[in-house]
Length: 187
Length: 280
Image (cartoon, rainbow over all chains, first blue to last red; front, top):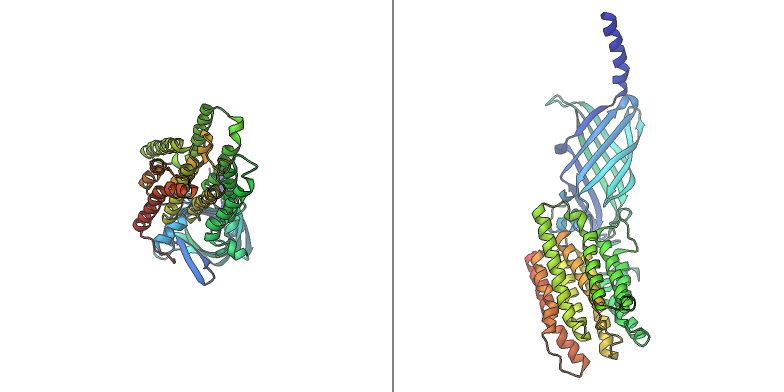
């Protein structure tokens, strides 16, 4: 009986080690924000207020897969009238394209920490590869609820006309700088 | 020059107006439907400047651009291919129905059942009212062009006030093109420049463009649906004005007045109710 249990444990152990831990993105600690030149005068900032997602993370195997789905209609620049304009067909057309998604395809590592994440960002139904640089990262138990948590800060930039968002170009900036901070809790 | 071409007033007013005027004047002795060709050229140029020379991703707005171009080309070409009036009316209805489904169905299908029914009934009513209105004036060049100009101006201004400069600019570019072709008719006269040659197919772009742009402004932006009711009355209002003058200028002016009053009033109302503040 002991032999059988031992063999069973040996059979499971390597399998468990190969399976990356799965996490669910915590919307209350996740921020997808952007900044863009406003007519060359200043930088305009905004964010999306609602997003969901998942993370598979295994630093030992240098494996990380992230998927974030953003509710496009939750765009928020702190100005109702401008937000309505941004939701309309001039920009991200949230009635026709209700979600913006990011799905990672490749990760580079610096030691046991991910350095960059490349993935497909889909806006207006157009998917283009984007590389995000990870500027901060920590995994461990949350000291308050004891749940295993990973957090990442990442930055990148996109050219909006690559996604067919051409209105107001070049007066309204072509390049959008992205800042993504998210936490994910182990399932 | 590049900066000039990026300015909305050039993209959707000065350039399409000038292009339509020049093309209509250049073609009026060569082609019986010079006004429609002029409007087609004006819209293609303006849409290229406003939207860029890209059709990807194929959003609802870009589908509208394609359909308006196709409808103008059909109105200019099809009378020879489809000579029968009933055949042309059937073609109009088919194109309008398929166009509406192509542009809006993906969005409408996600709505609750009552909203889908409301959209289908409302869109059908809008199409039928505009078709009936334009059929009344299709044989009168002054009234047809005045109604097209006013209706598209109304749709363009209202869409702009309702948070879509893109749809608004497309409507205004069409209105400017109508204005250019209309002015050519005033200058040289005759049926050759007139967009109306008593053919039902001629009404297709004048119905299709405001229906698609108006409904897109309702669904994709925030134009109240009931704003389309007074705008749909424009062809009827234009038809009520007696035009018993020899002067084409006076006929054009009088035919345009009721439509322009409705168009500007609706746009002002939308602008007021949308609590517009500029400069954000």
